[in-house]
Length: 158
Image (cartoon, rainbow, N blue to C red):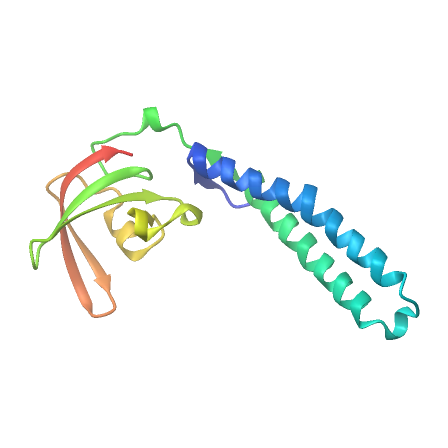
């Protein structure tokens, strides 16, 4: 049974493109490497053949895993998102209650998280702590050095 995960149109396209790259380009390369190694003689003492077979096995495993992820992937309809509370794809403006610092994050699926561009996973401690909160709520989030409070200042769609 595959696990359901939610993606933006951009994230889903990226996943499909990567899978197509593995199937259409990397798989034939792996087969070619095995054929070349097989042509070099005795397979019982051919380390190059063994390495090529192992690389092919790892590639097939990666392809199978990505196909499973894609089977459970669901596209999020951004136009239907509720901005009254924090959900996946919400952009949340936060105020740190301890130092007053303002920050903004967009909650995304784990595979699309990128802190440099302000995208955090809904499975991260901060993401989990923000889910379901409304403007004006204080999210108490456990971090390694204690608990931090964040006031929800605004919620918008990404």
